[in-house]
Structure formats: C-alpha cells, structure tokens
Image (cartoon, one colour):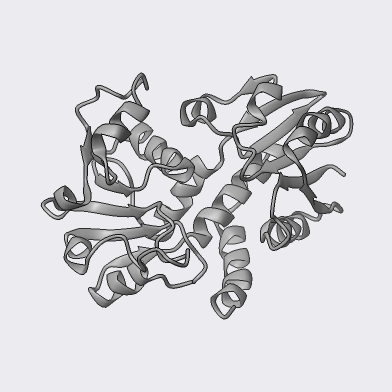
Length: 277
C-alpha cells in the first residue's frame, strides 16, 4: 500500500484515524496501514516501498534505524538525528522529521511564537530534540535543557552545531527552580508511565512560566497540564503535536498546503473521543 506507519507495538496507534480523516478531507481514495516490523525486516520493507509506495511514517524504535537506508535526509531531521516521515520520489527515499513542525502547530493553538521567547525543556529524548531544534531555528532568545545530570547531558550533545551557542544553557531540576521563562516543555514520560512521578516539577516551577507544552496526550490532562490551568496558565497537550506532525507529513506526500481549518476540524473530531478514553 502507498501509505502507512512502521514501528513496533503500534496496534493502538492513532495515526490511521488521523490520516484517513485527512484523506477524506482531500477526497483521496487511499488507506493508511500499520506495519509491525522486527528490526531485521526494516531494510526489506523500505526496498519494497521504493517500488510501490508514497509515504511512510516511522515510530519507535526505528527513527534512527531507517536513516542509513535513505537516499536523502532533510537538514532538520539530520540535525535532530531522527526520521519520522519518509517520502518516495520515483524510488528515491527522503527522510524528514515532522515532529519539528508539530511544535509549530502546538504554538499556533496557544497563539504563541518562539521568536524572542525563552523555553525550558524537561528531558533529553527524541521529541525534545525536535522541539529544541524548532525553537532554536526560529529565534528563541534562551533555551534551557533540564536533566538530572547536566554535565552528562552536555557531553551527549557535544559537537552539535549549536553546542557553544550562549543561548543554550544546561540545568538540573534544582536550578530550574531559580529561573523564569515563557514556555515550559515536558518531554519526559512523567504523568504517563507507572512508577514515575505524576509531574517532573513542582507547582512553584510552573508558576514561573507563562505557558506549558506537554507532549503527552494519554492521559488527556496530565498533572502538569492540570497544575498549569489551575494557576491560570495556557497549556497544550501532545495531541496537537501528533496531529500537526501528521498534517505536515501529508503536505510532503501530497505536495500541497493543508489549511488551519482542516487541522481544527480533525482536532475537534478526534480530541473529544480521546479526552474521554
């Protein structure tokens, strides 16, 4: 089939529902399938895709695995070090990271901008790298990378093109309590994974930021989002990131711009269902 998602443990993915609604809006008679693969099957799948596919999304644990098998990688995806979208142009496969642009959709829902703003990222995983790169490329004035071991984290990113940029600073969670900023972005699994704290930070930290971006959407309202709204802060959960990155993937595959109104229609249709899951 032309479109689908490759990954592992993906049976409950929302991607088919999202992409089928986009196809419906665009009057495209296509399906979007899930491809549950073992790592040793990824290369063969991509080789088959070259001759008969248009688009693939990629989720964990294969966002880095696919990269050596591609012919071209978009600069943002190369800088992030992960691919979540592949387009097929006459047999030539190009990798993209549309999570990068998913953060633009999150900010759009908050009526926010990265330009001239300060942002603190909690966590250092793949989605944080996409968000970091988006804010960095679009003029954030100050970016804090927050982890339990800042020196270890700093070494992890050594050699990046931004590594010595004075806008980027490294903090532990105690140091985070001493700063104020515009956006607090949670890229940790806190609030979603049993056995971890419900929230990575205290209410006093949330109080020091104007708005919260939460990459989790199950549960729909994490403790961080609840806390932010209780304090009168703007807060957006990760569903807009998920939908936004899917919209951008379709823009790449269909070679056309999708409207804000389409985003809002699909958001309303699916979010009401997800909120009550």
